[in-house]
Image (cartoon, rainbow, N blue to C red; front, side, top):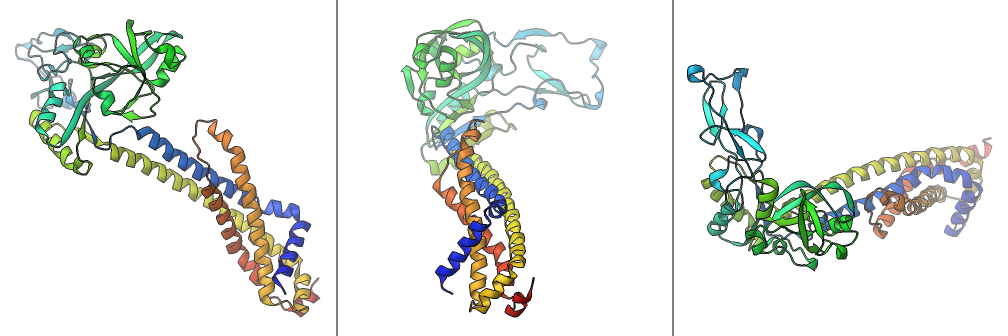
Length: 462
């Protein structure tokens, strides 16, 4: 038989059984749509990661210290209260975190203070008590501008360094009638340059703002829109942070980035010292950000930073992370999720393939006499095998095309749930490829069984 004749037979059989073809291809439709959507979501996730980290300097290192519960306060081993000589309790004095200290509020000589008021012993250090009654002095570690200067002076291969912290504060102003909580970032004047932040209106914070503890702020793009309706209306307006008025000296262009744990678009930036004086006191956990001159030398820079900090804070463990590892970790998580979703889509394809196999087995049984006639008029085993494989592939391809169309149709619905999708031709072609492979693999055995029928027995069957 000529190949064109086989194709014509396949076309006739598919047209005569349109409803059965549609039902058979449902599994393939679902699988193809899933594959396209999964790939689109994966590409969208990669684009989100790229947008999130696009403003990060490749040589940036973030250094911070997370205070564990065991590092401060009272701990009583064995559940018993320690006894004091003479039965007298020591006198407590009340100290405020917002009183005194250096201009940045985090001097190495005043690390025992924290937000609000705290009970302290006469020595100014908070002791902890072990089960044996031994008293051990422990002080809270708070990185400071002095630490930043020590690192800058002692670590070779650094081009720039800055320090920042974040806090949550209630704000109001503009179109906000009731107070809302926003992330407030205390930064130095060089933060914008190090983080590659660009201004849409106005200027970023200056050294003079920090030195004079000026109540001025810079709004992220999203924050400006949420509070004032637009970035233009926000510029040179007043926003109240913790009931104090701050002049909006600048508005950032849309960034879509995270630097040192700060989402630039959603944050409000104020001078470092201003925030310590009016908002946080010394109860902060700053992040020191340094820029390595050579990206390839970043591991050596990190080790040198650890050495400098170890000299100042023996036995303390600091977290040092670089922008590259953050982005790689985010991409790795995204790839893992994408692979899991593709695995689920593959299972759907397998189920669809099994459906095709079952239908073809039934079709072979129903068309036994047809197969016998084809063999009687000269059709070879190869012709019968090819006809049934082409039918299986056609059913799968039809399901794949419908599935791709369905995926494009439902993509607006998926994106309405704030899930980013990047539809692509590659995803559609891959889904069609999966469909054809599924039809070929699962259609081969029924086709082979049909080709092995004996013509006389096939013609005699009812």
